[in-house]
Image (cartoon, rainbow, N blue to C red):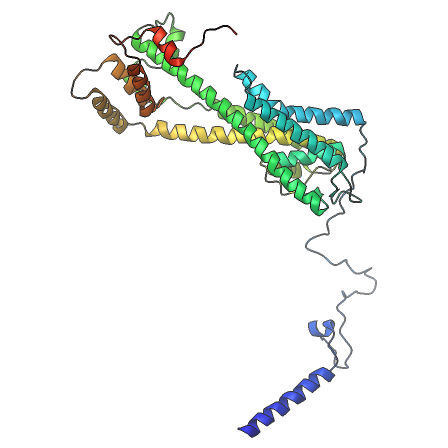
Length: 419
């Protein structure tokens, strides 16, 4: 056993010494050693017949990409024009907290003023910092530097819309940290803006519901008298079936939002496929528009000129908003279509059973019971909301199902003192 161990050790030592003393083999020798019989290597160059001209160039499946075009270190636009463009871009975003209440005929609240002031601070502060303090690098830059005003609004549009091409990035660690924090702050501000827009849509839907409920109440009370055929066609219900059946969903909101998106997309394609210096085909511009306006932002095709950056800075905002509106209207249409298609004989039976529950043991329906049942069947209000309204009515101590107006005003703590 011991002899075998010594023998194996001797063999291992000889093998190691042999490997150490051997010359390393070249990579070409490891890859291929094709030799003729006389020991000369076989040439891998293309065979050329005398008189046939130079050998053909080797074919590559993927051609090398051209070098990216360099942007000038300073904008060729006058400073006053750059400032006007930046202010216009900021006003497009910063004015929304004040425009939405104006559209809704509502006063501007303190919260909306704070949101608007914060948004303006973030936007103007970003323009100053990105153009004067923080250094950036890009494949289009000849050296690390701060951004021009045009490049700044182009970069900030990518941040706000979350497109993120990646063609402009902060160069230093502290700049990367600050830009990361700035992105978080900007997203919170934009989230509050989106909340205002959502509230605007909800308010419009609420007004539509109030219109339906008012029309239905007038029909039930017999106070709504149609004077001609047009007003009769506009009435919500002419029978109980029409009252509880879902309204046929309208495709007009979806078509309007899609038309807006298509117009913006076509303008994008026409601009980037025809503007001198952008060097994009129509199909590349189409691909770029879809990737950009959907906020995917793969970055294969990006603006190459200052005019392209200005165009992209504005149309990123408009196009992404139009696409979000289209997706929202599409989802709403699908939900309403499902409700419309699910209404059948079983739905009518369920509504009839629910009316029996509302009535109780009696076989007659009062006007208020019918109103409550109709509101619940149309899903204009929830049962808890109706119960809350009835409880508020009872808490005012009605006499013969009536309440003094002054009692309601006292309950609401209405102050009629002129201000």
